[in-house]
Amino acid sequence: MATSVQVPLNEYLSTSYRPDREYVDGMLVERNVGQSEHARIQALLTALFISMEEEWGTHTFTEQRFRTRDTRFRIPDILLTSARPQPPVITEAPILCVEILSPEDSMAEMKKKGVEFFERGARAVWIIDPAQRCGYWSLGAQDEWHKAVRMEGPMPTMYVDLEPIFRKADRSLMR
Image 1 (cartoon, helix red, strand yellow):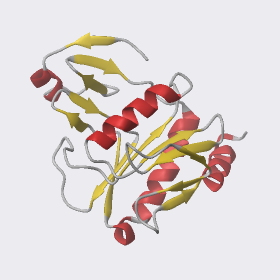
Image 2 (cartoon, rainbow, N blue to C red):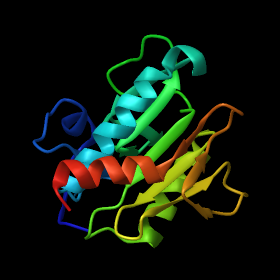
Image 3 (cartoon, one colour):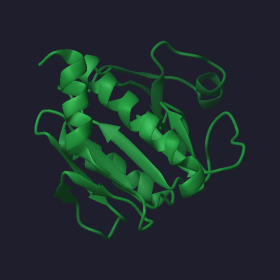
Image 4 (cartoon, rainbow, N blue to C red):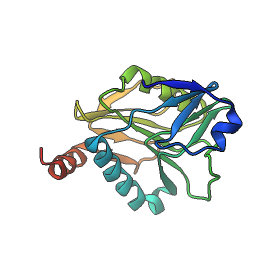
């Protein structure tokens, strides 16, 4: 993970960073910024989630600050909440948090973040691994991580097959 700097919470909440940073127990933590493959997969998933908002009763956000603890603010790549207006920093339990691995990210660190999302009440967490062409999903802190190309959500109709997403990403990136 990149560098971190100590800052007061009120300063973090009143400051915009480019790119945005997470806040973990007083430390300002830089996030690994995804490259083109990461960005394309994020865009494709976001478009799909937006197209399903009415059916799923969700709202889709990308790189939105999410308060996981009193002194922790994370920024999942994609976050789905109930379909109602949200404050500038999301505090309600999300329906789904999605993280897409960048080359510098570790699966262990992402799973730790996933546990933190579950502690805040997330109903599902997905970790997408572009390098391995698969994902990992879980429906709760006590649930195991399932390695799959079909990602499962907390509702019967909430699932995504990753193979078409990877194919589209490959075509647009001329692999």
